[in-house]
Length: 312
Image 1 (cartoon, rainbow, N blue to C red):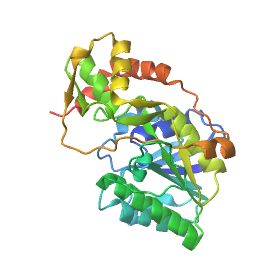
Image 2 (image 1 turned 90 degrees about the vertical axis):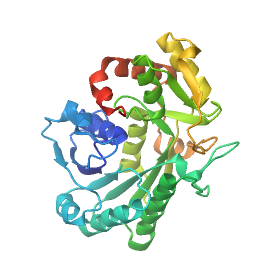
Image 3 (image 1 turned 120 degrees about the horizontal axis):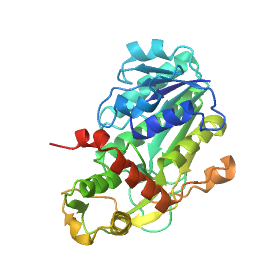
């Protein structure tokens, strides 16, 4: 199989590519990958360094919205996995350009990677795939618009689109601006770690390896036109997450300071992932405390990767 992976130099996208080229994803053994990435925000070719010499990897440094590059690059590929991050005001035109190219090249599957943020906030229970989307941030609204455009291409043109929406991810190679690496790298650097708000915000945590396993199942076995949730089943308030990090790093709470970042955050995210478990047989395999310990160890062992990414 020949896969075309957009945003494949980012956090989740690069993990997906590395897992494929290491033959760690059942059903995708031997697959070749073309990564298209603009190398902006969290995208870095360094994320692909473990597989950079693979003969099964090609790299195209370009914007997903550049049809003059995408259309010829897409020739001969069987499927697209679209990881490119949401950009308010640009994501919908970008994904529409990619969808049009997929239609022109008659790809057999288009997997659009989304997020639980498109639903907004939920006080109790969990969203199902039938829940209404109600994003509260510009980035989430851009991603929600791209979701709808992808599904519309299935309904109107018959393009075999599958949408996945996941919980918050964690693991190696995640940009230090994100929640867990931001806390961990600050503590490793001897700086005070900042906890936004009062620490009561709740997120559901999913290891990036489990996320990529779910994406592979959606790619190979998901029903065209459907949405699949990939949940972590580990709900934690930010304060409880900090407790676990401090415990594993052997540090007291005086290394953490609550701060007002001036933003309004969704209070709680929660996904019902019964559908992907029941239909595709997916289960999370990485136990959270073990995954968190391994992630902290990775950042401790790779300061040369994350220190250049810290803000000045």
